[in-house]
Length: 158
Image 1 (cartoon, rainbow, N blue to C red):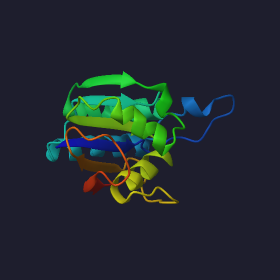
Image 2: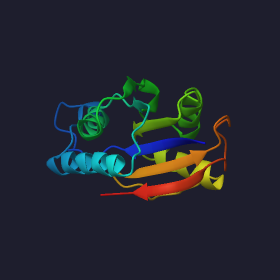
Image 3: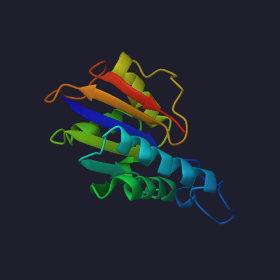
Image 4: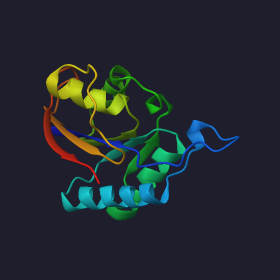
């Protein structure tokens, strides 16, 4: 079995004048949420082997806070995570099938739709992954990522 951990970025500041959405930092509340997410992963022994992160500032800051608690892991910025559909995220995760425990740090609606697609087989209009929320999916070691392949083994939010 292998695990796919989906982590939505924590609460971020609104877009400031002259700033792009990619440059939005975490709010003070978001920084605390991200650290709490790291503690939860550490307490549940869910340290990833590799982390793939959207290039947005809020996702990078979320990952940095998590790594501050769990320690260093192989990490890569993936531009395709920003504004990705569930299908694009599934393809990205599938490209890292060699990793036993993969962490994707990204955005909604892509992450929550990927969770629904992998668990129930349908992405639809599923809503329910709050900022800094974590979904842990378990799937067969050699299986391709496809609808309904995974079991929802944990769900956490701050």
